[in-house]
Image (cartoon, rainbow, N blue to C red; front, side):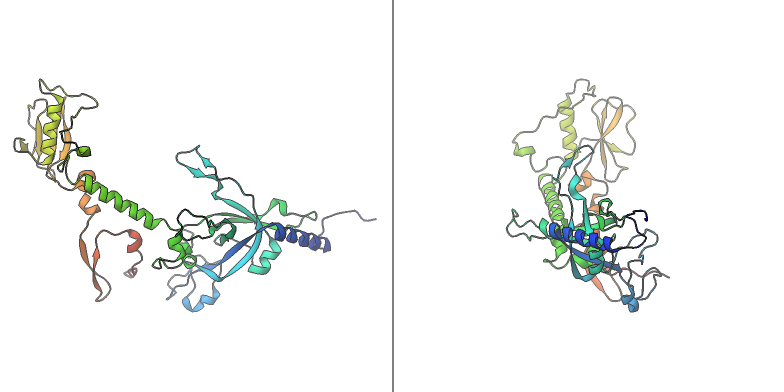
Length: 372
């Protein structure tokens, strides 16, 4: 009598019977997933990149091609226009915030989804791999606070894939495929799925928080210009107070010799506003200063106001500047330049463009060709 053994060197009828049972269990108890199949990196027109196929060989795209061999990434990806539906299962968990590190991190933003291997290969032609995008319809939130907002499905990108440990049957052959997915954003890699950013109704604009962040940033700038149009409080005192505020230093390091701290701070504020008629100027500090003396160094651009406190000169503010940006950051007019400039593009393409524009819009312009 031969020895009893569940393991066989080939897939026998026992394996196919178990595979059909597992496939039916996943199909009956699993949920629907829509798969955007990754085809490979986008082709180039002239074939200058040896890692990418030529445009004439677009039908030969393969998931094995690599766009950037240096950084080992595929930034310009091509996805199949056909959407494939698969049944899969995963454990639903609560979205708890992890406070063990600096900031807030969601523990439930990564999912581990299990699919039936043979059914997946029958429909996709291959197993799910890193780069594929999974759309989850049952996570569609149709009860949004904003009734005019677009209700969309959740989109996840496959990060890793392997055989599931619970998918091995009694005959030691695997039946299930397990993938690790994380939410996608409006990145360059998924442009063919998310659509054109110029289209207001595109999926990219629905998923992206870019426009909202730009509006918040512009509102902060407008608020800063409104509340601080110049140095100090030239348009009025804080909170529209009718009286001059009283300045009390947090740490009294002044030995004013009879001059009160508030008097010194008031003189500094007046000088910072531009009232520098009684403040001496020069290229070097006086050799024998008194406590509370003010001095403007004209070898700085813009001129810089200093106050003598204790045993050294302390910088107060840059004077005669009516732009809050220049008082807040170095080279403020360069960072926030509201002017327009004339751009000479390619050939006779000459246009007027704003000097202050986000990099995301600059990089969408035609890329300059290499010098060689």
